[in-house]
Image (cartoon, rainbow, N blue to C red; front, side):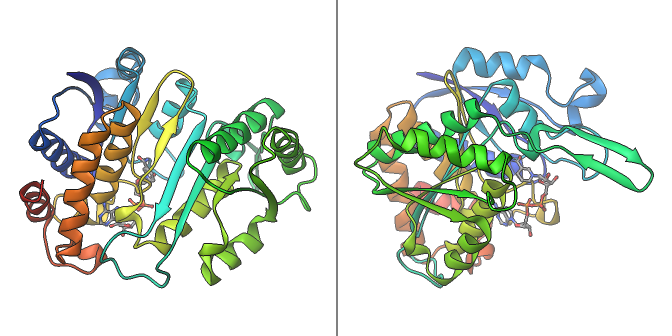
Length: 330
Ligand code: NAI
């Protein structure tokens, strides 16, 4: 029996987490879910969107599965997602991106991994209103965080038989901040002579990714570029409904899809649970339940290969119908 924290989220969060919990339960794996609420719904009673109890639960269990939580734009509270990553020092955001069976996309052999720094850069939230017409947002890049994320990317490459780690920056313009990121990459890369090194500017990367994503293997990026590029790579394999992610720190890990709470389809039984399910499969591998991870992945791939899909990837099934098909293929 595993104890795992479950954050159901809001928007489509509860629909897709119900689906994933049900699939894991039917696979036969026993998990004691410690369900924790967070986000705008808990502010009124608890005064914060991210109560300490949520952090305590993750620290205790060391692993969490998280559905998306809404962040209002321009006002209100700071993103629960960003706060969570920061509070637990989940410094590595890992977003593998590989074609799935029977999902038609422009390219057939996409297999790359985005490793995004998760704790600093423009996401540090250091902003100030200078006057009515001017606002500043400070981009923070440190040697410690840059070296740590580059080491994570190279270690991941070694462990997963990857050939190359490419550093992404805009160091030609942001010579000091992105320059420091690149300098850190070069230092860490020296310890991994077996892995190919490469450096690219983020604008050129975007152009090349849409021309031919097979040119890339592992990408390591500061926070903001990583956020944007990983949505682009999600698009290469069928969109946000199938893009998985994980936030990994020294002591704990939170597995969550790349997508947000999709308020436009909330409560309509339309959401694709695949991205959260793939994130959960990675979580099962992380806790060494490889057999169950494989069993669930096989059922998902079989379901997709049989042509059963939700609307976002060209199918007609509802969330619950798609979930039931996966369960029948377990
Ligand atoms: P979004 O990812 O929620 O939605 C973008 C588009 O993709 C929408 O058309 C949506 O319907 C579709 N989509 C997303 N996930 C889907 C799924 N599983 N199945 C089918 N279609 C899906 O991005 P948006 O609209 O920019 O953000 C909505 C809210 O989510 C915002 O408050 C944002 O801050 C928050 N957000 C939360 C994240 C998290 O909790 N980790 C990550 C990204 C955004």
